[in-house]
Length: 296
Image 1 (cartoon, rainbow, N blue to C red):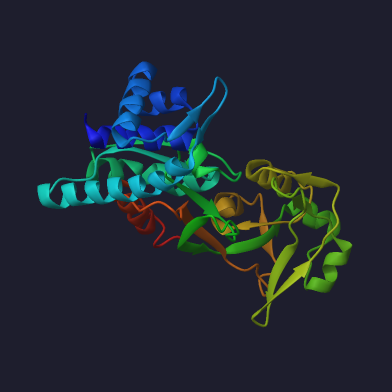
Image 2: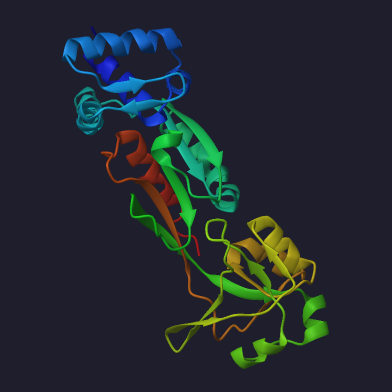
């Protein structure tokens, strides 16, 4: 029996809670995974996973063994690469925030693929919280303040943010000169998909963060329609400068309240805290740091 292969099969079934999804990830027949796991459990002399027609659940021994397997497999891969002097290889599953991916990551991706030709990238796009273990994702790229303690986050950039609106809106409502003027203005409010609450507008005043709630008739959940709503003249928004750089140059959007800008937006890569960082993930995280090194 190939012990390493069996450990990889067990880990993937554990993480995906499904023989079918694990078989797809590993590009192996489902029957092969079942046979491999049965052999492995017989060899170990313990049951690692409880299976039913609907669910796969780890036993207590399976929980403990999974943690050891994850660390051992990552250390084995790292040692193999070091002594064989070969580049990282294999499939890497990443989830990217959409606008960051389109503006920064995807245009630079050919450089990563040329540097690491043996890494196969599987990329998904989401603004929601992703269960990395259950969904089989190795790392995610996110904007904003980190709040999930189950993940390790590495900050790779802080992007300048602006308050802005369309010239049409400003002609109708006037340009705010200070925060007191905002009581006479309308906002396009961005709503959290997780909490369904509106994000307040934030401003840096004498080095201190100050929140201001601005009323508005339009609330949105997505970054693309948030920007589009401002261009359409529906109200003030706050967003990273890169999102509106082209529109500002075209005269479609104007920055306001430049003396009290929003705080910078942190950009971070996140991965599970209970997983040893594999060489594939490590080089991708380091490369993202290079991509965002000069981002402002």
